Length: 329
Image (tube, rainbow, N blue to C red):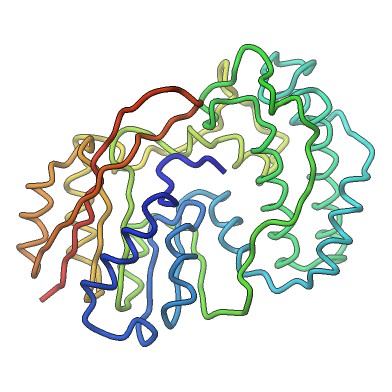
């Protein structure tokens, strides 16, 4: 997935800086990715530390992170994907509300893919409710559907709007293909909670923070992934883009971002805290340095990298990513 704020391109930088700053053997330490998104950083560390805790407030993120650690056999997985790819299309909720030829006029998917998503999503639910698959398999199949749907979505990578005409990749047929999973079982936990609430109930060694930097609300940007995952067909999508109701994160509001971050840092029961934040965020680097220095030893490193592009462009714009480190007193 071309995910907003993904740390794929920065993963090497993040790993090396954390390894350099932590003066202990990583394999003896626990790691928490508190704003995990699609799990890039948590997955990076899962072979390098004692345990990993993932958390995100979005349901699609919870599903994707649960699925990464699924131990369902490859044979059973591939066999099920074959069956799902052969299902007869259904003119259901996603077709009507978010697809070409649907009643709403929204163009997130072509007509065939909208019907395929409905057919697959309904069948997965039936399998689970009839106890033919367990919760682990259920999450794995849902994650696979989310990834498959994202590949053929008619968007500029985020779902706050759809394109007026079907782009080339949106014309492709949706195909359920195996997603990347952990090679071996690993000690992990996955949560779906507000970060400032969860931080009061957990502790550990290394805490990695990657909160929203500005007013980009992931509940809005990826609302359709949540809708496919939840599949609450009684939902009445709002407005032209078919949004679902959501609560805005305090980190996405300029008036509350700083207070929320300081509260999080203050309540964190972790020795090593690392914060990713760029030069365009609501909170200035100097203010973050002040907050962290009041709680312990602060250091900071940075790297420049190309800005997130929702579509392929010739833009050469760069942003500067800071990785702040706090070793708490």
